[in-house]
Structures are given as structure tokens and as C-alpha cells.
Length: 442
Image (tube, rainbow, N blue to C red):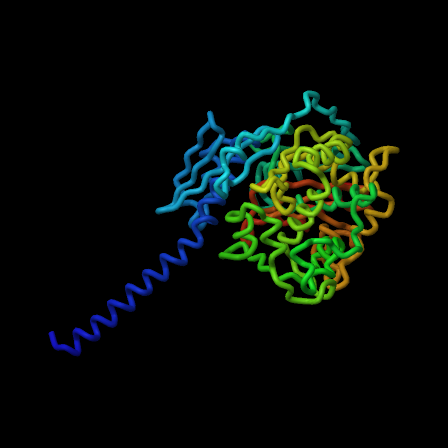
């Protein structure tokens, strides 16, 4: 071999080695996401929803690198360990709290904490309504859940009309008592908690937040209203398909709100709209800071929001800092989600009892100034007719992989659909579903 050939071979070899090294370094940065996603979601599905490991792995975790994890469920310690190549993540269930990805060094102290659950389960005040309407909606329930004719893989379907149940259906292995993941529908619950605290005089949504990290720059002007309307101006990448801000926050960070509030300012607050799960976790961290302990905050949420809605033992899962992950991690039942939707349909009241302050629902459905009618305050709007065959006054709680609460005031209608219906090809055709339901009302 000539010296020139050896030099070329050496250059090629060095380039290949550099590419492999670079690839390994980049892959290593993805490991907390790959293993963390599997560990967290499998643990919650098993220990909260009561689903079988094999079913979750075959459906919810069967995509991208996630499907290559080796998962071990420890039913005694209530942990899940997920391994991929050289990396692993551990998620643990704690009574009263739910599941948290273990990040950091103080895992023993964290795992020893428990939140005492109330002994009494609340009575479900929902009743069945018009039997004739229920009969007309049966074929739609069949088509959605049993036949999957609307696409996706729904787990649960509940329809309320005039405040009463007129349709309800569950997939195999799921029941009315199964707590299911909210994903971003949790943002709307964070809206409700913020409203209650505003009504109690604990926060002012229009005042700049007194967050120490923001006082030296333009971030000091950000208000809760800016965050609720997704117009904080903070830099953020919500792309779920890569090493984005949202994926790093949910799967790598011990303190998710702190990670989000550490982002620099990209725009003047209140001038640009873009979706940010980080904004919600900043809000939740701020709300939590108004209470002396994690337990005090959880008790406030239970007493002021969950108990009036007859939601028994909700799991609003926290990060390692103890803050509930307001962007993503709430587990309650399908009927619980339906009662929450009805609360907003009824202007924040349950019967004669006011839960949300007067005017809060109107504020919630007022479009954010830069959203082009798409978004209010942690609720989506149909002003832009994203569902063209549904009344314009519809507003909704939207969650990843097809979790939905639709509220249609003009039809006195609440529709809940939960399950695993990922974009782009397997998402439920919600416009067609709502159109068909409304047709049966009329």
C-alpha cells in the first residue's frame, strides 16, 4: 500500500471514528428521554391505571427507540426500571402522589414521603339522562370504542347532555373506576387551580411575577396571564419527536418548573403565541410556592377543586421537587374528566355552589391576543374552526395521543375521549365524532 493510500485510509478511518463518537455522544443525550419515557409511563399505567405490562408495551410503548427498552416491573417496591443499551431510568410510585422519575441523588428521602389519602370515597353525583338519546348514541359508542371506526384506540368514552350521562363505553381492561392519563388536559386543571387561588386572593394573574431569577431582565414583566395564554415570550421548543425542551424537561429534570423558567426571553411578553408545556410548569411551581409544604398544596387542591367534583384520590404526579407536573401528569377517571368539563360548562358552578370565581370561565375562553382565536387560558378554542362541523363556541382540553374533553355550551354537551390515538395516522376523527353526536341531539 502506498503512503498516499495509507493517508487516505487514515483520514477515512478518523472520519468514521469521529462520526461514531459524535453519534454515541448525541445518543447519550437522548438516553434520559428514551428510558425515562418508558419507565414513567409504564409505572403509571401499571400502578395507577392497573393495566398489564404486556398490554402497555404492545400499544403505548411500541414506537421509535422506546420499543427497544427492557422494562422490569417490581411490584413489591412499586418501581419500573427501563434499560436501553448502556442507560437506565427508574420510576417509582408513592402512595398519594403517584409516579415520579427518579432524578438526582436524594432518592431515599424522596421515596420515603407519603401523602395520607382520605379514607372516604366521594359519591358520584352524575346520573343517567334521556334513555332515548342514549339508545341513539349506542351505535356511535360501538363505532368509536369497539370497532374503532373513527380511528385511534380509545379506552374510554363519556358523553354528558344537560349535565347527565347519555353515553359511556370502555375498552377491554378499562372500567369506570380506571384512572387514565391526562397528558396536556392537566393544563386545564392548572387553569382551574389558578382561578380558585385568584378568587381566594392568593394570586393576581395580571401582576408581574416575583420570581427571583427574572428580576434582572425583561422576564420580570411576565404575568400569570401571559403564561396561561401561552404568550410569556420565553424561548421554548415543544417538538415531541426530538431532543426538545419539553422532552428534556419531562424526562431529565428534577425540577421541571425551574428548568422552564430558566429559559431566556425570545419575545416581549404578551406579543407572540406558541404552545409551551414549560409555561404550565412555571405556573404550577409558582402556585406551589404560596404554600408551606407539598402536602399543604395538595390538600388545598383536593379540598377546593377535586372534592367538590367528587374526584376521589386523584394522582397529580409531582417532579422530584415535589411540584405537581401541571403540564402533563394527572390521573383521574373518565367520569372525573366529564365532571370537570361540566364545571366549565356551568360557569364554574356545581349546582348552587360556586367553585371557580365569577367571570373566570369567560376569561378562560377569551382568545389570547396573538393566538388567532385558537387558544384561551390553558384551553383550546374553536373560534378558528379547527372542528368545522362543530359550533364555534366549543372549547376543549386537549392532550397528547388523543386525550380530549370537549365542551359545547350551545348544545349543553360535554364529550370525553381517552386512549392511545397518536398523530399523524392514528388520531381519532374528533370533528366527525362530535358532528355525529350533535346530529343525534337534534
